[in-house]
Each structure stands twice: as structure tokens, then as C-alpha cells.
Length: 132
Image 1 (cartoon, rainbow, N blue to C red):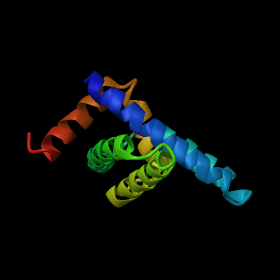
Image 2 (image 1 turned 60 degrees about the vertical axis):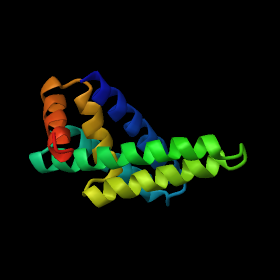
Image 3 (image 1 turned 90 degrees about the vertical axis):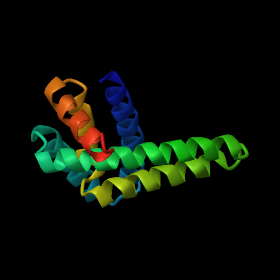
Image 4 (image 1 turned 180 degrees about the vertical axis):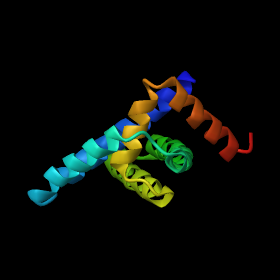
């Protein structure tokens, strides 16, 4: 169970840093809208569909992080930031492909750290997704 919490936290931190960087380059009205959307994302408990989407994105993010770690080890110091940037773009795309926004993914990951029932639901969905 703690493995899921840790990995979800790491994935959320990675996505949070990516969305924060995106917000810095957005138009002035966009950060307020993004903050509002993030607040909405944290208030509503996730639906069964969102838990399934979260699990799908979580698995994809794990695969992306594994590939990026290998690429980082083989990259020159100059290329490592490009690998990290590419990883963040791929993670955001994986979350979107699963049907969630980065803010909603992060909200679910954060909620799972303090909600054992949600963590159990996510674990169950992960096991089902991986054929277990």
C-alpha cells in the first residue's frame, strides 16, 4: 500500500511541477482559472470512472518514468534536462489520454495519501488493470 502512496506522490509531484511551469507561461487570466479548476478537483471525491482513469494514467506514468530513468542514465549532462522535459510532456499526455486533467490526477493522488479507502480502491483497480 505504501508503494502506491509513494509512487502516486512522486507522479503527482512530477505533474505538479509540470503544470506549475505551464501556468507561468500562460496568459494572466489562465492562472486564476487553473487555480479554480485545481480547487474544484480537490473538493469532489473521485468517481469509479476517475479511479479507473487514474489507474490507467498511473501505470502509463510508471512506464514513462522507468524509460526516462534509463534514458537519463545514458544521456550526457547537457541532454538530461531535455529528457526530463520530454518525460513531463509524456506524463501529461498519458494523463490526458486516460481522460483526466493533471490537476485532477494530482488531486486524486493527494487524496489517496490520506484516504485508506481510496488507496484500496486504486490498488484494486491497478491489480485488475494488470491482470492480477
